[in-house]
Length: 81
Image (tube, rainbow, N blue to C red; front, side):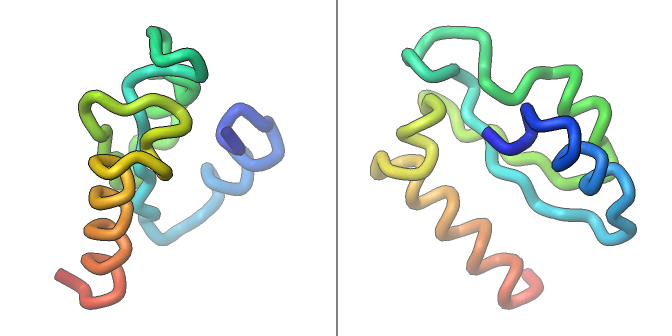
């Protein structure tokens, strides 16, 4: 949701360390387009994007598949693997 904000996207574009970003392929109502557009992904291509199949804006964090993907991404970042 924050990547829709110009100021947040600007901060991300200036970040020198790659950031892992978890993204859903579907929007708020579970239908295309995703909340984080392909243009936003391309604009921040220096970062590490993970799209979690079958999730929307809400289930990417609160559904079992999305929560597991976010937990795995966090675990990976914390352990450096």
